[in-house]
Length: 243
Ligand SMILES: *Cc1c(COP(=O)(O)O)cnc(C)c1O
Image (tube, rainbow, N blue to C red; front, top):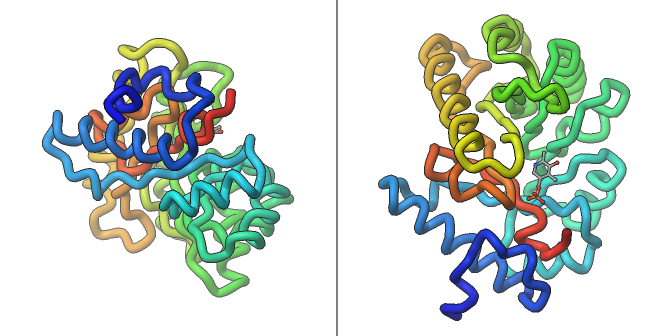
């Protein structure tokens, strides 16, 4: 088992491991990252991103103890919620307003709200269904043109809109770091964490805005994300062993 615990950065390149072994290794890596910075591993939710695998692999992950899964396309999201309705399903994909009905009221958390239009659309649908949909606002911290997410300077306006809407609760912020540069990833996560703290304080009295969650960190950088305060990590390849 020691061999397996080492070299976590290479996790998704070792095809011989089972999903159960991979999950164990992720939890161990999270626990070590937590202990380095004095955090409780129970405060980090591990979301298995299943977009590249089939139902049998999801079943194996469930068997291994994974409770939370993430999908970025509404069609697969729908299929999988139906197959495993007892699990918590997260919607993490780009939001198209005509697809909102496919996940509102079914997603435990929508991670990727990146416009006022999406926010209002989700709130309207949730209000019609008489539910409150938990969401995160996706922030493009790094400013990369290829990334989804709102510019940090747009956050005050978006949060102000959110605070007026029945049907949603903004539970935190989400981001994706630039790939392949650990220092840059750390800087990105640190900035998201600072944004959360800043805006949480401004909205303490607000029923619709409770900024507690930081969804950040994927297969390559979740260890750094946990050190920087991630409460939710989204791991695909390193859990399922696919490229
Ligand atoms: C695919 C995806 C992930 C998981 O990425 P891995 O590198 O496979 O861990 C996480 N978050 C989002 C938004 C994704 O689309």
